[in-house]
Amino acid sequence: QVQLVESGGGLVQPGGSLRLSCAASGSILDFYVLGWFRQAPGKRREGVSTISGSDGSTNYADSVKGRFTISRNVAKNTVYLQMNSLKPEDTAVYYCAATRGTQSRDPSSYGDWGQGTQVTVSS
Image 1 (cartoon, helix red, strand yellow):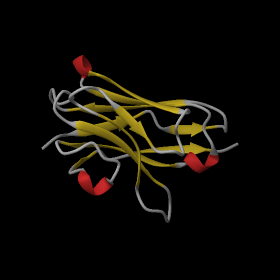
Image 2: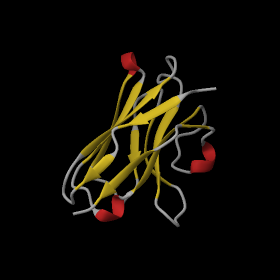
Image 3: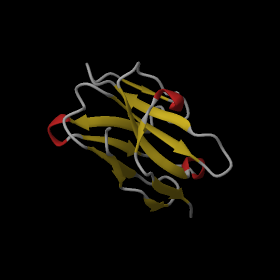
Image 4: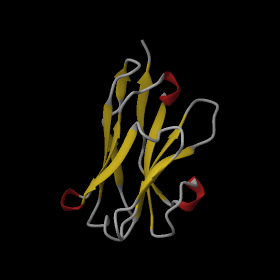
């Protein structure tokens, strides 16, 4: 089982930036798809962005394209989510997840999850 630990959440004003980190146990980034998901109160968990283990290819939800960037440091077994131009509607608990399956933003495709980190965008 893969262990994932998120960090970097917090309170930020609209228009601000945060960088989330997801540290994985072991050298898995070459073999797993890593994804960032979020869940706001009363809403379903949704996929934000994913990065492929094989070639580093990425994809994004339309709501974050141009504002969020996913990246990875294979040597540090860490995946990042740089979030810029944050909006109040980005407020949610953000989760990191891993799968050896296909690269998808469907949460049901992922079996290993971190504990989540809260992101609050408010003035």
